Every structure is written in structure tokens, then in C-alpha cells.
Amino acid sequence: KLEILYSPHIFSKLLKNYIHRKKNKMKFGKSLREAILKEWRFYSVDYKEMKKILKLNEPISVEDSESEHDVDKSLGDDCADKFFLSFDASKLKVEKFYYGKEAWAIEYMRVLEERVEALRETTSNPPSPESENTIASLPRSTSSILPIPENENIERIPNVPKYCPTMSDRHTIVKKSSSSSIWLKDEYKRVAGSKHFHNFIYAKKSLCTFERELDLLLDFLNFNSIAFSKILKKFDKRTGSMMKEEKLAELRETHSFLDGSTLSQLRDNVSSLIDEVNSLKPCLPIGWEERKVYTIGCFDLFHRGHQNVLMSLREFGYYIVAGIHCDESYFKLKNKYTIDNLETRMNNVKPFVDQLFVIPSTDPTPFLKCMVSEQDIDTGSCCYARGDDMKLFPGREWCDTVMPVHFVPRTESCSSTLIRTIYHADCPELRKKAAFAKTRYDGKPVDDEGNILKLKPATSCPAAMHSITASS
Image (cartoon, helix red, strand yellow):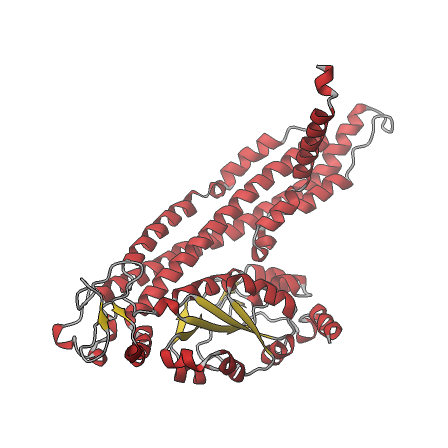
């Protein structure tokens, strides 16, 4: 046994395991912070604060006290009051945040069901035989059926009927030839404007985004449950008490939602609806999924709303090209400085796109013109897509003349303005007010009268101004 214990190899392995366990124990506070969305950290268990309270209230030694009873009293009275004041504040924050999200989720689920029903109704109306040779005569509600024009030089794929019923995933029913480019370009625009495709995109993308939102909320509940348990264990260890099980029992009674059962049921329903929506995907012209997709944004305080939109762009093509405004043009557009400098914003966006370019002007049109090739315009191999919070975006007038323009639903209750107000406002009252305020469709926090909660211009972002000055 002694030989095994003092073997250099075994000792080294034991030491590494000990260090690894020690590091894991010390890293939970950091892991909690990284696991919770930046937008939701305000509502999470204040693990760091409670841990700090326990550290500041070091137990006095028996030698320095008159009796062992004094040690227990010091630990119980001095530390417990501060600790449980913070503990109860965390419980209240988590509870208020959760019930607000649950009410929103139940209400939003009804909206999603309506969108799915609209998609069902669209796909239940096939085109009449009289309209099979006239694309222009097809009503927008029948875009699930893609006719093959008789007078075009387009080669038929064997065993494919003239009308392709809606099935699932990819639907391509014609082979592209040199003489079909004009027809395909017009067809891309027709499909982009069809009611069927619009209903499909809004149903699918809203559901997928909502599913990710529910996953994030379930993670939030899970990590905060662990945080409550771990901090109570630290309290018992520090004070020598046995409060953990009693407090956890109370928590299970008052905060039963931490088990995530309601959200889990919602998520199962959403997954079923996603499968149905995928089966109702409209037929798409050949080459649809081979197009380049252009988009432009500022992407400050990069959040899940940005991520959801960028991931949605793959529905329109395989190659994503994004333009991003520089710090100076951002200020001119919004009359406030960025929180994240240009380099940070570029690094945040790049994992979601294939190509990225900088726009040093408030008008992106000339730069977009340089990025889009004439060949792609002539063949219809490009389109523009973005969130539907700004349909009259800068540069749209030119985009409409050369390519289809698509919109995807934005993520509810999420915006850079909301994050900026909660975490970068100088006024603590404004931060707290914004954290639990109602939000508009574009995610901006509003007061009871519907007015946007705004930061003072002078205190918008001094740090960003320093970074701009330093870089110049």
C-alpha cells in the first residue's frame, strides 16, 4: 500500500484529480454567470453576493471568544441576517422573472397556433386547372404549387407531375437552363411574395425561436436551482448549521416552478408543431437554396435576437453576406455610441455568416451595390433578408429593384436597447424599472404609458467613445 501511495505516477494522478475537483468547486459562480444569458443575469440568483457575505463574516476562533456559545451566536446572528436577506431577494427576483416569462409564453403559444392554422388554410387551397399555364394568374395563397411553363426551354425531371403537391424539406421540380434564368428570377420574386411562403416562414421561424427560448428558460431554472442548493451548503459549512434541507423544502413549496414542468410541456407541443410545419413547406424553384443572402445591421450588444435572425437567413440561401455599420456611422444613425466596438461586433457576427463587410456610412446602398455582382442579379441568385422590425430599412429602394426582399419574425422581448438600459444606465432605478418593464414588439422597454425608457444621451456609452478615440 505504501509503494502504491508513494508511486510518483499514482501520486501525480491523485494530485491532478484533487486540483481538478478543487477548481470545479471554485468555478460554480463563474459557470453560473456564463451559463445564464447576459440579458437574464439581472434576474438570477445573486450567488456571488451571498458568497461574499459568507467570506466577510469569518467565524471567530474559540480562543478569541469567551465561550463556544459566542462562536455559534456570532455565526448565526451576524451572518445569517445578511445572508438570508440576500437569499430572499434572489428568490423574489427569480420568481418575478419566471412568472412574467410563463405568462408571456402561454400567451405567445396562442399566437403561434394561429400562425400554424393560417399555414394550414393556405396549403389546403390548390390552384385551379385553368391557371396552370399562367404564373401571373396564380393567387398568392397557392404558392405551394409550382407550375412549369409550357413555353420555356426547361427540362423536365422524370416522373415529376406538372403540379408538385406540398410535401417536406426540399422541393425542386425543374432543371435550370440558360433560357430559364429570367423565368426563375421572376419566380423567386413571386414565391417571396406569396402568402403560402410568408405563412410558412413566420410559422416555422417563430416556432424554432420559441423552442430555443424555452430551452434557455429551462436552463435558467436548472442552474438557479443548483445555485440555491450550493449556496445553502456553503452557508451550513461556514456557520456549522443545518439549514440546507429545511430551506430547500421551503423552496420546493414556494418555487415549485423550478422543476420546469410547465415549460417542458410547452416545449413538447412546440416540437410537434414544428414537425407539422415542416411537412407543409411550399415547393421552391430550382436554385432557391443556392442563392446568396444579404443582410445589414449594427449588431451592438450581440444577443439571441441577432443570433435567431442570422440563423433564419439559411432558409433563403446557402451563402450569407452581412454588412455591419462602423462605430461612427452607428452614432450618426442612432445618436448614441456603441457599447461594443467594431472589432467586437464583427467577431460576434462572423460565426453566423460566410462573409462580412464594413459600412462606413449611414447609407449602405453604394457599398451593397459593390458587394452584389451583376451576374447574381441577372440570374436571380441573390436576395435580401432581415428582421421585420424595420421594413423600410436604408437601401431597400435599391434592393427592391434587383432582388427579392424577405423578412423574418424578430425574437420577442429582446433588444439591444433593453440590454443597454438594464446594464449600462447610470440610474439604478432606471435599470430596475427596465428589467421588469413591458416591452414593445421590437423588444424596447416601455413605461405604463407606452413610452420608451431612455438613457440620457450624455451617459450612453463613455467607454465606447474612449475606444473610438483610441483607435483613431
